[in-house]
Image (tube, rainbow over all chains, first blue to last red; front, side, top):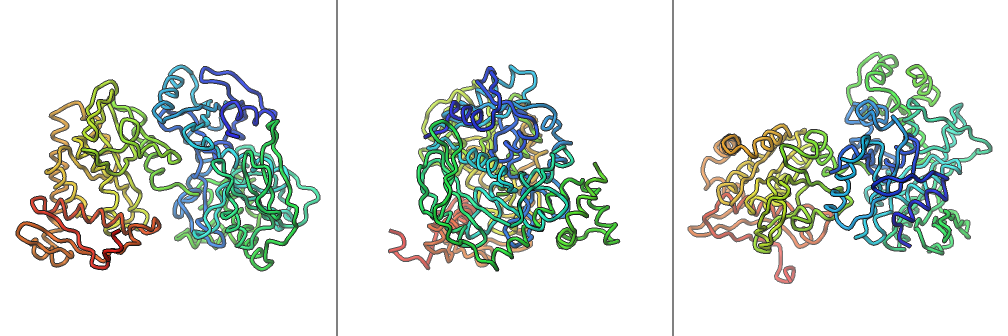
Length: 355
Length: 261
């Protein structure tokens, strides 16, 4: 099954009960601005701020190169400066969090064709940044819809109490998994209820993201997934991730695959009625190693702190650091040492101060 | 995954120059697209006589102005004026000859008679002076003009001057002077003569030809994770444009005949 414009609209409506609206560029899905920001961050669909290269936050909000390591990529931080946070983006691009957005799937065979369509639409509408363009690349097998599948599994596993993320940091050798979900015991046991959320939403508390109280969860759990739309083969890659021994479960993510490649894998797919279908693994074989998973959990419990810190502006963070350390930040190592030693409660107290 | 070097450059271009400037329309494609690898006008790759060079990251065109593409002699309805290859390499540890590796991407445009720009975004490292020399000598040899820049203000100045001949000529003249001076200062300091250059840079100068030798191996060209193949191409263009009058041989003593087949 190829996900085209029609299918995209049906899947979004069927699974998330979002309204379909008509535009001169075609039908679209209406979504609130916070949800639309997550959609754009995961799928790369761009806000129509210009017709040549619509803006997307995808890739801007990353933090570390690899798991178990604290080496910054340019993203949330740029060296010792807090840079691409949702809050900072909201200051520079006010349109992002200003009104509801309409996500329009646009089919095209060539970039020039797409640009011509967008240019025309851009000149016709009075508020182009209210529209987000979901590219449907007909020239590609699978229409280039892997990121959309990543979005679907993120939204689904959020409901199962995970903090979810696409394109997660792992290692240079294993690559970057398309999907990850984390239940972190230390976070669950803290007074802060911050699961059932996309990782980026941890940085959006200041922008109005609501916290979700968790009930009944006591244990850590880590899941990983690989999405494909052009082929059904994803086992080799998924096994690479699982071989790290960090994860409890693995997910094959494909719009039309019927059966998982192995009985120890879950399958995330879409049924003939456009409903998301999660086929649970038959074998409960243990995939993780306690020691390795503990290392990963310790790292993750720090990892999420940086996303909470990203609710602060750079000046606020500098002052926060100086209040604790009585000196200025002079290196990335200073930041890492400071943030890793903070408790969730300390960070949250600081966020409340600036709200 | 974090933003790639290309993505950073493309976003910066849009932020600073917008999607159109001075009547020129910007063509830029997202990373997920492979269409930049197609020949212009569909893609952002240029070349001559059926030989395509690397793809560019951005191109500024005048719409509805015909252009005959020297790659295939086909007439396109839009006329490309400036093609840019960009990199964030100066912020990513490229202090040496790794900077040459993308030189050929904008070269296709230069050979096609356009203005080719290699934009190395300002960073922790400086631009290698050789690169200025390569672009300067390529501009002397080829149909178009090759410019090396490290900030987009210069590019803006170029794009604004594009339809004012005297202003454009002056801009290019000044830029050529600057690039040549950069190259010459370094050359005089490090080599003084081409003989010394040859000795220090694995080059043998003969009367009618030149030999550039290096320790490249087959895997440098066949293993995508190794960048040495790209650098070897950059070094080839360095030698070619530094000695434009001479026939050029590239010697890889570590490669066997079997490696070549």
